[in-house]
Figure 1 (cartoon, rainbow, N blue to C red):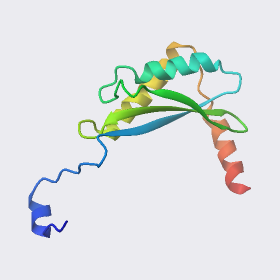
Figure 2 (figure 1 turned 45 degrees about the vertical axis):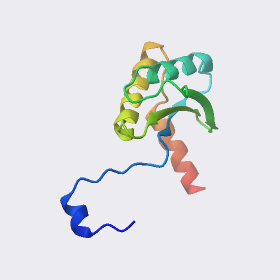
Figure 3 (figure 1 turned 45 degrees about the horizontal axis):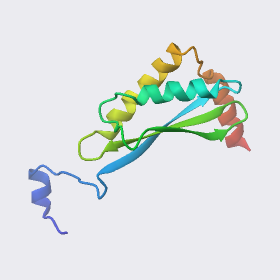
Length: 124
């Protein structure tokens, strides 16, 4: 499709994706020894009810990585690509993750531990 530059600069442009829904995810580091069932419930509750997160397909949680200092859980969820602002929705979910972990008494790893692991990975 060819669109004149003047049209792009003077008109509103809507970018419609090919798919009506889009999956995204939020990765959450958790310490070894964390109750994974409780962490999964907290993550799913964080996505529940957030404007822009679709109820179907349902959000899911996976163990994404096993690091030297922690594990990484991945909360996956779907948004309506025509109605939801993906970045804003994901930001709200991230805030809700922090709240849900706090409410469940689940700690997030100390920032210093993550920094040490990242530095050792980049120097290797």
